[in-house]
Image (cartoon, rainbow, N blue to C red):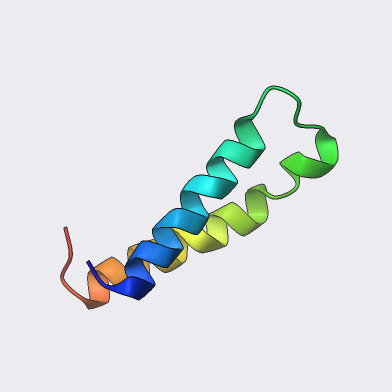
Amino acid sequence: MSTYNRNIQTIKHALQFYITRPDANEKDLEKKKLLKKVENEVSNFKKSNNIK
């Protein structure tokens, strides 16, 4: 796994945890847009590098 892929996967998982933690408030939930962008970045990277 490349360093870039590992980094964006780490960011994705951190955002997922941040948004779903028990004490998240409405402002924290606004980070869903950022999470969606990161998920798209992960998907695009995997497609362009033939990673399953």
